[in-house]
Image 1 (tube, rainbow, N blue to C red):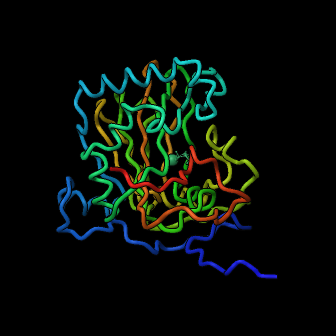
Image 2: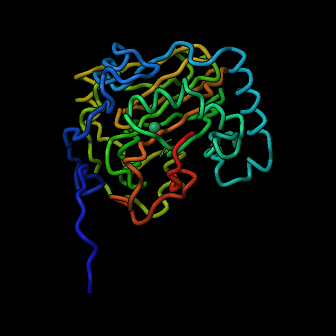
Length: 298
Ligand code: 6CS
Ligand code: FE
């Protein structure tokens, strides 16, 4: 009987207990002098903190275009019934729509925009493809947030991404105040991988995209990370953007204000880091959450 060749798992997680592993990968994969939209100071900050803010990535007119497209998508009953739409448990509003770069030509154009994909190529030092895209509506009046987690922990465990060569961008489509459930990141947390305790349940994504269970840090681990480095809350006008490394420990609070915190969230993965079998899950997640088409963005 032939057994599968043993493979290296650089970032063990979802075992019996919590285990930390120092980051084994670069943060910025391109050379400092590499051409691209991010200047050397910006790249240095991204390497140190794990994130980079752009005050105005897209113009107010472009925000209006994408807001209108978001409204069209979330009010379309066909989209609402699509498995790629996640519904808010309480209000039954649409919470997120995945794979918007395939559903919407308008959002596909944003993915190909040099201001967006150019920054991803510069950080990842290679051609890139979209591992995941979504719009998060986060309407007011009680939309729930996302508990603390590292995206890479999930993308490694459940989607089979081998290395930390993945970057996310969250582009604000409504103003992110300090009150309406903005993104919070622990600076520098991207440099340590926190392997979480507890096996991945079958079909975990059906629960985790509403409220993540498996793959979240213990109170002790979270406390020591936050005590050491603090917590940064991202605010900004519509059109602002936050780029953050796949392994940042981040989360966002509920939004009980009347002001929605809508964003478009695009995850670029290096074509040198394509998904293999999951490292800690019984089976891969559906391709609308973890892409299996590695065609580079052109
Ligand atoms: O599981 C995921 O892939 C998604 N979940 C969260 C809370 N952040 C990253 C990603 O969109
Ligand atoms: Fe996340």
